[in-house]
Length: 62
Image (tube, rainbow, N blue to C red; front, top):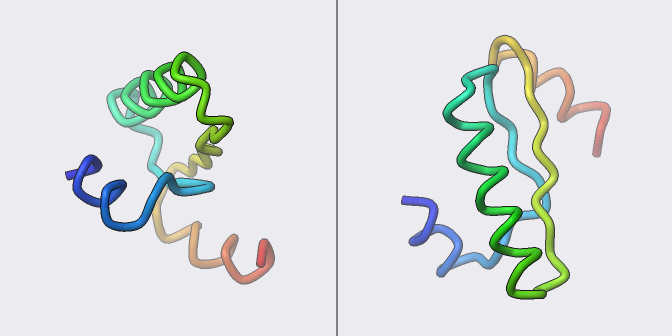
């Protein structure tokens, strides 16, 4: 699913995820690959205990 989204929209600047360890390790692996191929693009990973907290964060981060 991430591959299709990346293909359509390019590498995202930041991704909001919950506190799941699987999501974090997967995105860190993607960042390692991006560093290795030298694209200069790194995904900023933002985590919260609950995804509802991102709605509040997005209002102030923009």
